[in-house]
Length: 194
Image (cartoon, rainbow, N blue to C red; front, side, top):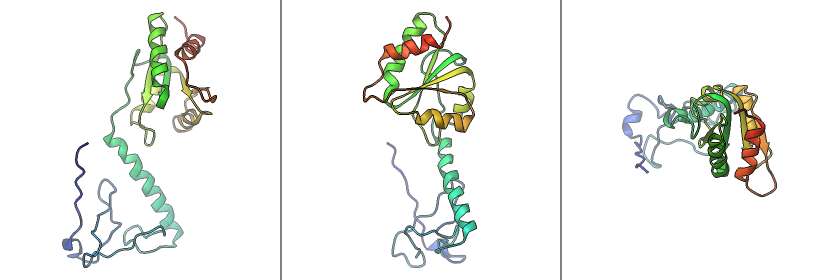
């Protein structure tokens, strides 16, 4: 991994007034101050803080603003992660198998087999869940059907339906066993045409 360079606040941060530990830059990042530096004193801890001064705040509007600001900061990460790509199959079409986590190998094998058998199917595997890649919605809407195999009770399918208003279908297995490529291939055939 590349080194993460941290630029700490110094005495120049108080040249034009008090240190504002919650003032954010274009990436919504706050300045870091090394503890003990004169003039850069501020509060840390779990209490709600004012959006600029960092003072403890019990103001309901400030609390709402800070919750939304923290969410916006997380969503800005999408500016730095790669766009979602199709792993196998056409970029648009009839059926997309959307996977995440440990389903990768069985989905990849099943989709390759289905493509070899003449079925129109594609596969993409999500690696970034929060935030999603910026182009994920456009990619998903390029397919008539989206099936999401999950080794749980359908967490991702619910998020995809909610966030993108796509009628994705869940294919769940919660038996403590992984999917086999055969199970996924059968689901592809059940939802496809050659």
